[in-house]
Amino acid sequence: MSSSPRLDASFNGAVRHLIVVLGDQLDHSAAVLSDLDPELDAILMMEVDAEAAGTGAGIRSHKQRTAFFLSAMRHFALEQMDAGIRVRYIKLDAPQNTHALGTELKRAVRVLSPKLIRMTHPGEWRVLDEIEDAAAEADTELEIVDDNHFFTTPGDFEKWAKGRKSLTMEYFYREQRRRLGYLMDGDDPEGGEWNYDKQNRETFKSPPRIPNLYQPQSDEVTEEVIQLVQSRYPDNPGSLDRFIWPVTRDQARRALKRFIETRLDDFGPYEDAMWAGEPFLYHAVLSAPLNLKLLNPRECVEAAIEAYRDGTACLNSVEGFVRQLIGWREFIRGVYWTQGRDYRDRNGLKQYGDLPEFYYTGDTDMRCMSECLKPVIDHAWSHHIPRLMVLSNFALISGVQPRAIGDWFFEMYADAVDWVTTPNTIGMGMHADHAVVGTKPYSGSGKYIDRMSNFCKDCAYDKNKRVPDDKGKPPCPFNTFYWDFLIRNRDRFRGNNRMAMILKNVDRMSDNDRTEITVHGRKLRKQFGIGAISS
Image 1: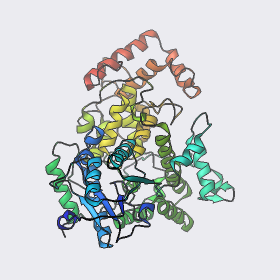
Image 2: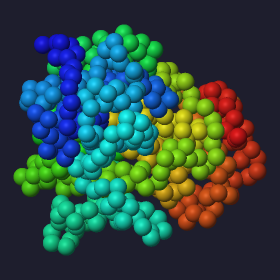
Image 3: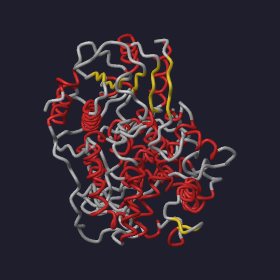
Image 4: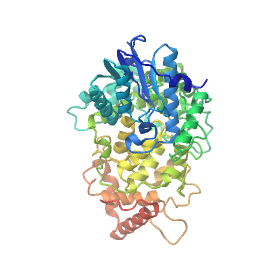
């Protein structure tokens, strides 16, 4: 059944409460919906160019990301309507659509005259400001409700962070484990260790046999959205040839079940591994439905722990999965809301290079980069090691401006929401936040990529070289840029104990060696379109 006739319908007349539901708030159990009265209240949902096209943040949006959000929103609205709840749904091609959240909210207030606007706390400073300004201009009270999808509130994190010299995720995670009781044996962690990362660094020696990823069949609603996105945003990046995302809660729960049953046990040992042509490996691929709130992190954690109790998943895999949900995910959100509105513009290492065009096309002879960019272009997704140690790492060590790569991650990933994307890129990936997220940069040479993947095989570059010679292949750009990065920043990192050992290698270099690396790095930046990296 087409969604158009039902979602095009609007209604007039006064309502008591107008409940604003954004595209990343598709939580059927949200606190803001708990006391909704179908006779008195209504939901407002808005498809606007400013968000769907990415222009609200000054950037574009991957076609698959946009289609995922819009299809999930439409399915959620239809489910609410089936439950007897009134929904004012503004579609992209609605004739009077003003294409901005603020103006659409003010238009809804004029039509429905609510006494109160209610909404779950947004996931972005920009959206929060826009909604607050619109409510004030409409002279209507606005109530922001804590997002009960998460285990903690921004206020909880602020209390935890207060007075600490540094914010260490491991300490936050341990407190979460104790408080929530997950994988605990009394006051001690299950198995005697808080985390099992040492067991989770295996690599593949031969092509892995990966169970199939759950991929729901597209229905008429999704197909309608895909056609709309193709026609409305033909120049936006990415492909829609293979849409992989669960767009309803039922589909998301099926995806979770498939992961628990077929891939969780191998997730831990191989969570850092990469293999050409296998973007999903044993990963859950649940971050996107989680970030739209189609899944609740509690059910994910509890399903994983149940698999451990049943003996179908090993402890190191389950603990690693649980840590991502109750530790890192909550920690990153807390960092976002405590660091303020200017966080995404931080540039602690003073880098100003341009992002290479091949980040959008995948057209590069660096095999590791092309292998890691292909799933992003095709599916709007890759797992955390390609994100951090290949794509972010290249931008970091080559001198790209943090905001440029941060915006790229925001527009190119289906799971991108500002609260999670910005700290992960600006803080963790680019070390641009003055060491709030990490005490040392996540930088590495081609040796790390070679150790964790088969990408270096048959590459156009020599994984063992850092400067050109007269023999064989040119040097791996990761090697050149890595050592150039250390040379450029050695005075800045001099007082960092975690960088001391590697900086000794820089100090041992001759002046001629350092000059060769610096000169070749400059040539590579010109070749890749990065340009000058100093202001």
